[in-house]
Amino acid sequence: MVTAPKPVPEGYHTITPHLVVRDAAEAIAFYQKAFGAVENYRLNGPDGKAVMHGELKIGDSIIFLGAESPGSECKSPATLKGTAVELYLYVKDADAAYRQAVAAGAKAVRPVQEMFWGDRMGSLEDPFGHRWSVATRIKDLSQEESAEGAREFFSAHG
Image (cartoon, rainbow, N blue to C red; front, side, top):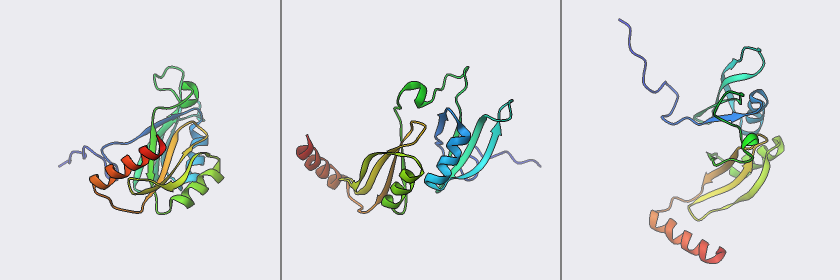
């Protein structure tokens, strides 16, 4: 008897980000160096060079990525001149992860600092225009404690 496949494949989560970049092979190499990504799968296009679909594992999460193609409706941040999405990456040590990503070629956007919601977090932009926040939970806060922290933060920072 043949068993039906699982609706969500083993090792995946119900939501999987899919990044579009101009050069997916270069992006894969960057994510390996910056975030310790492991390449699980790569499907090159008809030219044998451009990556049509790649799958990387960062921590316990999978991300898909592929090269922007002329006929596709999905565009890279380079084409769009910005992005509306930020990927939030929890790591063991946000400071070390931030330094590693910057050394690999990411642009520092916001330095690592303690945030009112209980994370130590900093923001980066990768060389392909995608925004990342690297964070480590340092305090478990209730919703009320987070809301109070937000009030204090915004009253101090307008």
